[in-house]
Length: 303
Image (cartoon, rainbow, N blue to C red; front, side, top):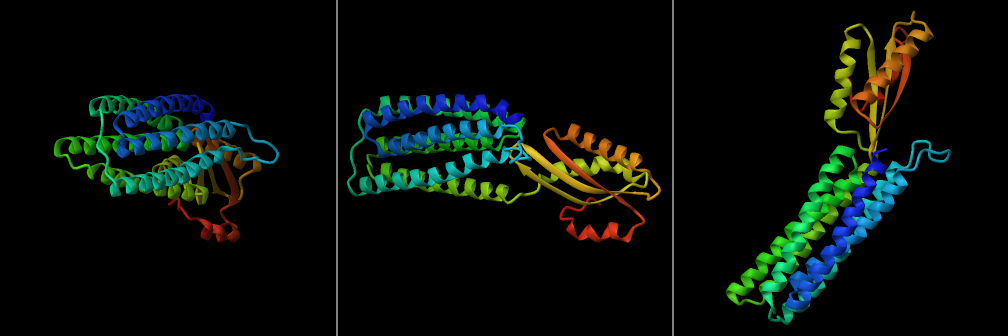
């Protein structure tokens, strides 16, 4: 399963988070910059998120059982949901620290050392995010993709902090440091809310992407040209898995064996085209009026 294949990548994320926490904390301690403090706090969130991602992917990789006949892949959404909440909490903490520094600005010390440490940490996050994003797309793991986008946000956050510190050095305006930190906090909240909305949408059984539905429709075209009809296509995603079901309408004179063979052929074709799919078909006779009464259930029309 892709969850099993994705799990080792979270170990890379954990290692990168631990390393960047050390580097960014060191940068804050030598500079006393609240902007770098906010950056270090976000790396702390990265570590918690990576640990939760490892647990979620471990749980999602468990095979289906009697109580969970469709598997455990939705466990991935617990990771992104918790990560969203933690991001918002961290942003509030950053904002409080920045507000205090805004009222009582402090000079930034040993700027050169702090910048070097922060730049190294940013490079580590950027490289890790690139690896996770590629793996997440290849393995269809929302957990890895969410972790990658969070790390990329951290990279841009670090860039903003470094620019702010540079401006403080050039202008001598100490107030720029807490102002940058407040902007960082606002950006982190925005990311947290966006991730939370995406998680909620997936938990509500959102349909699979339009391009994947179009692939299913393309597979059906040769059969439609032979007189086979389809309707009531319904799809949903659950972590790395897809669940697809639709009705297959064939001539009433067909034998059970013919109908069963066609459905098996269709299901196998879709699984080969979209690996990780669980396909259910429902066979109906074209001549029976009741076969058409369930078209109103179709939320993603085939034709």
